[in-house]
Each structure stands twice: as C-alpha cells, then as structure tokens.
Image (cartoon, rainbow, N blue to C red):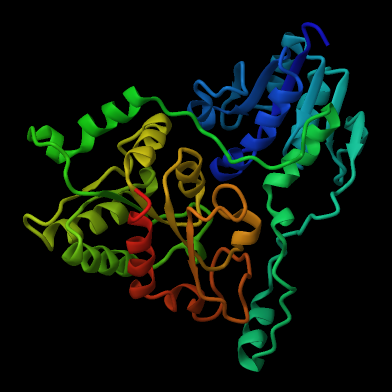
Length: 375
C-alpha cells in the first residue's frame, strides 16, 4: 500500500524488546515502502537508534495515562496498529488512537478492541509458575513432572513473528538485531578502558560480567561465584573485565569489580560500569567486550543481538523459551543445572536455590575458555 503508516506497539521490557526485533525485520521485508513507527516506553528509546526496521519512535513516560498515549497515537493517523503485548492497556491505547486496523492476540478483557484477533499459535508454550508447594514436593519425591523440553519453535521470538504474519511477513526466524556503530564502540572504550586512558594498545581480552537480573533473585548466580570464576580464569588467561549493571545494581557490580581488581596487579583490571551508562552506551559496551558472562536478563539479549558471544547462566527460567539470539545459536554457551523443580519461573526460590547454587565456577570457566576461541 502506498504511503502506508504502521504503528507497532512495542513491549515494555528490554529482553522482550530485543526478542521482537526478528518480527520487525520481517515486517520491514514485507512492507518495504511503509512508514513503521514503534510505540515504546521512554526507557527503551535508545534501543531503536538507527534500527533498519524502524522509521520513527513514539514514546510514553512512566505513569502516563492511557488517554494521553491514545491522543499521541490518534494525532499520527496510522492505518494499522500491530500490538505486541498481551495486555488490555496496550490494546486500549491503539483503540483510543483510532487506528482502523488493530491486530493482536486473543486475550481476556481486550478482544473487542481488536479488528484482527489472532488465536494462540500452535507452538506456544506458556511460562507457568510452579507453586512453592509444587517445588518442594518435586525435590522431596524426585518425581519429574516437567513436560518434555520445548522445541525451538516454542521460543518467544515466534510469538511476535506470528503477529507480523498477519501483514504478509515471513515467519522464519532471523537473528535478533540491535545496531551499534563503530564510533559508539570507540567512545565507550575511551570512557571506560583503562589501557586506552593510559595510552596503551589493548592486548588482553576484555570480558564482561552481567551479574544482575531485574526479574528477581532466582535469575542471579551468586555474586561470589562470579568473582571466583573471574579470578580463576584470569590466573590462566590474563584479561580485563567490565562489570555491567543498572542504577540499582551499582553496589553489586562495584563489589564484584573491586574484588577482581584487588586480586591482580599486571594480569588484569576490572571496572564497574553499573549506573554509569545510558542504554545506548550499554549496547556499545556489550558489543565492545569479547565475551559476556551473564544471567538470563535484558542485557543478555542485547549482547547476543549486537553479536557478542555469551556464557549464559540459567536457573529458574528456560533457555528453550527465552534463550539468547536465534534459537539453537551455537555461538552462545548455556550453563545450567536442572533439578526437578526447574524451571519454576518464580522470582524468589521457595526451597534451597539449587538450580543456581549447583552451577559451579568450573563449569563457567570451562565455557568461557571455549568462547574465547570464537574471538
């Protein structure tokens, strides 16, 4: 359609936003002449800088009313609204925005606001949380009632691809993509790389650690293990470390960087970037490192999307559903233990946190050693 204007109501979380990029890329292929605008929380604006699938970004602030967002949408006179989230609010924003065609999944309290109601796809696997009682019984009895490992087609990337299919897009998965320029990488080196500050050329590998996870404690490998793994690895392979994190993780990331930095003299350095980067700088920093050791988190997905190999540690969640990059991508090493209660998808462990405690530093060091062969 000539001069077609498409609004994509984006998702609200960093990792989910990255997992939606294959669908946006396929939408661009299907509608190359359309003007595609992404409606997104202000906190995610920087993620979409120079993204080839997006022409414009329309943002809303935390706490902004649905009526205010609806007015912003209505002022743009979109032909079609493609609604990625499953919430009633996201559908209401587009209904108030008066887009003639509104496409989204069938969900409670919102179907009347959609003009094209998409049934749940055949390969969808819902992340159902186990109760605390279920988790305890599974460990006590040793009975594994967890369904068979989901196929690659269960990955959440396909949730968004199924929606863009409604506009004629190809549903074959492609790798998530976040664009970062060479200049952005150069700038982040100059801001945080001690070797460059001292006028020396980088000769040692630069490895990243992402020890946080906004979802909750069950996604976080213990702080002490990150430190142990970094120290053990640096003894064998002199390298430098950047420790990432958001403003709420400054203490955690700072403590990890200080312990690593204090363990060595000439063998390596460690710097905490937590709370010191914008989202764009975070993307650049994750591209700048040679390998990232990470929990299941938003930065994990960003790192994969900018092309950085990962050592990704999973506990309460499922890499089959929300793993990094293209499903089955061999560039990324998944490290996990699978007790009978995992995956539980809970924010806090009701038992003994064995899914993470049983992941050893030896496993992570071995995976990191393998990953450095890729760079």
